[in-house]
Image 1 (cartoon, rainbow, N blue to C red):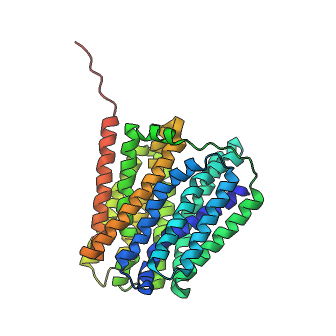
Image 2 (cartoon, rainbow, N blue to C red):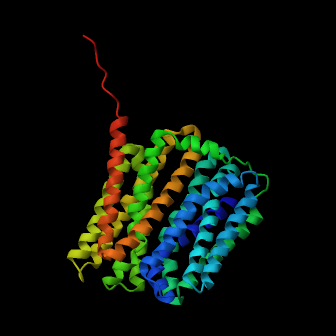
Image 3 (spheres, rainbow, N blue to C red):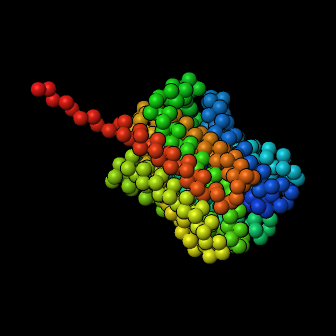
Length: 389
């Protein structure tokens, strides 16, 4: 039962992390700032997560895991409550950074705890249940949070997330035992894994993938509003993306087993790059008639982009099987670093070009990720054996 509360915490974190994309126009209007400036709320969150997560994990290595989870969720809840009452952009920015510190501490700890509390034959399912909290958040939490924000104001969405986090915290305090194993890697161990050449290449692929996706996703609602989408239609578009992401995540795992991780990741990246570029083309060439076509590109983006991720995870585990948790922690930081750069790049695109240009610029980054991935696969292919004589 304690794993359920870990999954609920992940659900709250996933909801807050992704729902902001649908709320940016309303936040910008309320705080009298540009949408590109509001987008830096995503950049600040992602950058704080990327940097803060490994530092906090090392700093709190010797503290009981139950206490660490309680501290992480309390920080996350406090950040949401601060956002709910923030009267200015700097205060809202600081509150999102506070949320990121809580999220970045909670997620890797929750995964480690799920392994510790499960029996050996159920550990894989325990990890899958925790990560499913993030997946379910994209399908249910994000559209629901966007709808709540459209009906009651964007501050109500932060209140909703804080409430979900508080329920998860109460469940963990009541159901999680003390004295759980403390197996967080030291800073030296993390740096040793990061110096592995193949790991570095894999992290670069993740950064470019995250950068491309969040160049567009951060400002998800902006071009849709330009097409005439109202709040309920934007919630529907987020539901389409979340449903496609959930399908893609499952499909990626199946294909990785059948086709191999390299082929599956390549297909995912190729599909995502194509979808994002098509997203721009549809917006540019079919103004006023692009509603269904845009939903189609969003669906293709979600299913292909998230089919890449489980294949990439499996590939990284194979690179460093003896230090897989460290490698996956580095990959998570790299993903959020990509999200941070993508949010900043998308803001620059809005300031200098137009919302309709976000897709092809994000797609170009994903295409670059594909090229690096294919180059890695080419170098790793079996070399022909030369026979003398």
